[in-house]
Amino acid sequence: MRLFIGIDLPLHIKNSIYNLVKPLMKKYNFKWVSPNLYHLTLKFLGEVEEDMVYRIDDKLKEISKNHTKFSLKLATLGKFPIYGDKVSVIWIGIENTRELDCLAREVMDSFYNLGDSKPFSPHITIARNKNSLYSFNLEVVNLKFNDDFEVKEIALFQSFLYPSGPKYEILKTYPLKL
Image (cartoon, rainbow, N blue to C red):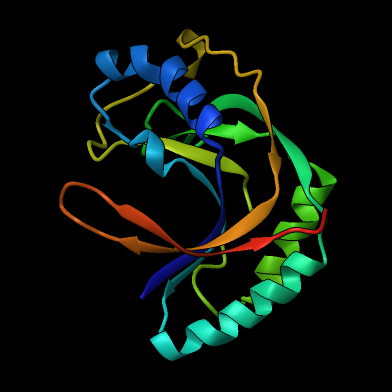
């Protein structure tokens, strides 16, 4: 099973992002992420044996009890790689908060032996670029994100890869303390 831990975005945030980036979709020939797939990844676990899911579940129950709900705010448009004009991923940044940082750190530390070891960089992927020759100048794109939302739970997602693009299914959610 291909798994990751993340925060699913409220529908109104997904719709707001989509409405703001819709003009870019016509202008840039990227692989745009479907709005129903917008999320914030806390930790990519990768391929995990099914019998490990019970241990992951137990740990996520424990982690969620250590954190209270909190608010997040959408920030600026960004890209990977950060330097130069080339682009492989376009994303919307999240203003990092102490609460988000503590939650992400506990998730990363708890599952250090699974998945990748990339440092946590809070963002929502909105497009991917498979054509390495294509460039994207962020300075000419003037999008303002003013939305904020409350994080009430974390989720264990299963990822399915298809030629048409990935699909995600939430296997279970873990409510944060009120």
